[in-house]
Figure 1 (cartoon, rainbow, N blue to C red):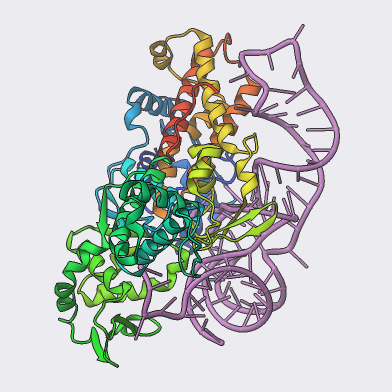
Figure 2 (cartoon, helix red, strand yellow):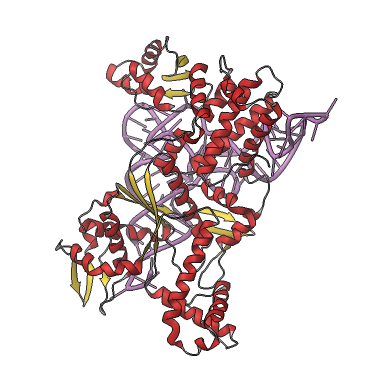
Length: 528
RNA sequence: GCGCUCGUGGCUCAAUUGGAUAGAGCAACAGACUUCGGAUCUGUAGGUUAUAGGUUCGACUCCUAUCGAGCGUGCCA
């Protein structure tokens, strides 16, 4: 909608290249401060320039009114124009608010270690990533999602030992868990499964740990996928660190084509990452020849860039922020454009319980599972909570609040608006076809505003996606729902003279809410 | 110490990326039901945007300093 309006305006004012939303909708639907910047060139007061520019729109058919106020130019759309946009939307609901961007994007997110189930902290990044993915798809981007599985390295072995100890405990032995090992109910559950599958004798001595590690890792990955699925999240592909390590020699050679990239010191191989802005250089191969974790990420990013995307997005937990510069340095040494990689940090979620800080530790086994929360409040509410906050702010919430299932949860508010419209349409006994054919003319201001807001979804999505601020979508939906409730309370719909006009507007509102919720991974309710 | 991310009503968050009078939701208070479902609506109260400077037509937003918070500062992943 904005694009069409902008085009019309640019015919008259070529230098106007962005439209804004006025602070108060009674000013108009769109606004521009263009007169302020022109004032410098023309050496005239912005107010006079704005007045002159307004004159050019006297004959326009998409505007009812264009006027200037304190140097701003405010545009009011016409009923005819809004009517034609409504028809477009209602006659092709599938494509409502879509776009045709054509960038190839690789999105990596979650990538939690397969050493345990996902906890509530992982859920934030997962929900954010999945929603970004859905929105990008809707806008036409060619986007692929990928999960990097850290299935190599020490922590998998720790998992194996932890499981071995867990099994010993189940079998009645006295067990002490050293500090660094994993514990918690899931280890005991897994131990019972392992005993059932391998038999008690299997756990006589520690020689089985390696095999056990791999077995446990596979089970954990299945569990993680299951956790994700219960929140409506699925990945296009998984990349295995262990598999990627087969390409280490090849990758290292490529890296060393740049003679500055690495050097040997104290028997270790270092990445010269400080050359590209890292605080210091990093070890990539230890004295004993084993590559470090960073090596894995170098291989992975080399593979990513070889696959030829226009843009790479990684969503990482904020505790990994120190990692960004070294990975980017490596990408540069490999000869790629590191600015194609964007890292979005998903800030820590601090938990409170009964008003007091609640510390989670996987190793201590006192963490709150994503699956538990979903069971208690449902996937919709969980997703919504995370999607109402910016990803880069420290988020704090009380677990007890999250469990509350009442009107303080805004998802009900939005769903209620959608259900309400559906009920009204049913009560009116009008056919959908009849309603859709109604022509909208001479709309009152509040009718226009409601309809205008419903048609804004595409703009909101673009804005939310480009700024990576997905909370704008939920903000928008809340606002739209609020307008609907206000409208409902003010106007009798069924049985009124304007029944058809009202219903048509409401259908567009419902479509917008439904589409928006769907992109957040939430199915709109037709009945509460 | 250094680096990153931040600091907005009592609480949780917004503010069109430098634009109009800093807005919502909770919580508090006062109202609206012989209802097209009140899971709603109307209103009141609550702010020196952490502090001090600076940049300009204009600053919550940019710059500098100070204070405060979280995270990082592993040859763990």
